[in-house]
Length: 417
Ligand code: UD1
Image 1 (cartoon, rainbow, N blue to C red):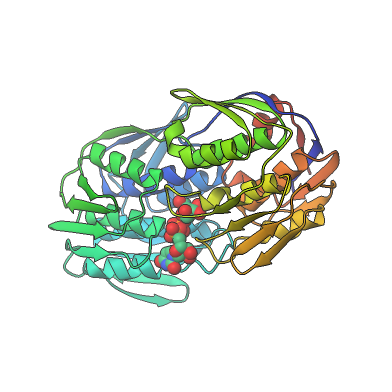
Image 2: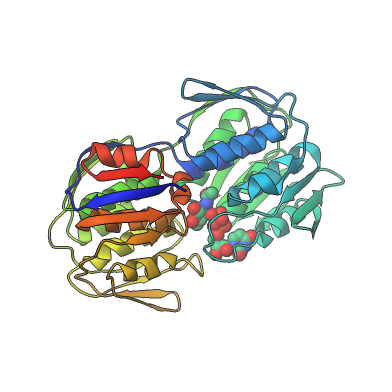
């Protein structure tokens, strides 16, 4: 099994080109199922989760080919309505094909998803909301068997809790339903806005009518469409933290800074020097990192997908800090590994109390989920000596060319078998 070997502690310097967003690409790929017309997608990241979603679409009859870096999808012969456990087990976003399959065919059988082990992560909100569009479902042997005998019918849906995936599934499904849907208490993450922009390009009729409410008029005809996916704000945030934590100096390119304003403001607060341009962020890390208290929250709050990385940074702060995790109930799995490296982090419920001034010691480490893995890479980058990170397949699910990008800015990192 492959491992990452990291020799710290270099100051990272140079330019990082940020890739397309994994979390925007996944629902957009699922939404292509709605259409029988050709779809051209640009700026998809080359990461394992995207490969898995492409394989899932192919397994259901989508014809997909690459034209250099772009993807051309032709679903005119797509006819299967079955998403197998084998393809969905590693990736929770597999459930996102349920909405479009029901919209297109009126029935589907989709495996309950896998993904990162960061909580129980049920799909009850997806299913309850779909039932308001006329879907009947049962769960047996790990599969959701769902059917809409009269087709999907537009409805008013108020999500009981903000869920990124459920909002995406319902926005996609309602786009082809009969009549009008109003979805309220929606997640409004930038990736959802990107999905909506893509659907509009295909000819769907959607309009944000309040901060967390969207009106969708179902259509029955879609166009050919070409779309370029937004940048990966979590990758961008990770490299910003890498600069802040190594006293580095980085130019982060291909981004829209206003999309990660919350994270930029946090980094300024802890002492990093940041200049924002139209599509670039320049950051210089400082020796002194000031402690702070953070809470994860739905966008525009601090992204839970950057919580583990922020925690490594706060291990280096001058005083005690607290991070409260408000999205997932079990998202502190990186803490045990960071404590093995010498951090002093105490978990109390959904709060992590982080003693500052940590001098990490190099160690052999175990990656547990996607963002936890990258937090271990960050810790290793600040640490003198050789660290070895196991189970890096988690990293490959979401970070394009991570060791190439890090090497280019001065990290001593390599993949070993
Ligand atoms: C997406 C992102 C993930 C990010 C998360 C929160 C993708 C592919 N993944 O995950 O990287 O960390 O948003 O920003 O885009 N919940 C339920 N029932 C449901 C659905 C969700 O109880 O049916 C709970 C979850 O367990 C969690 C919370 O709601 O505690 C938020 O989850 P959700 O926003 O749905 O996250 P994902 O879409 O899975």
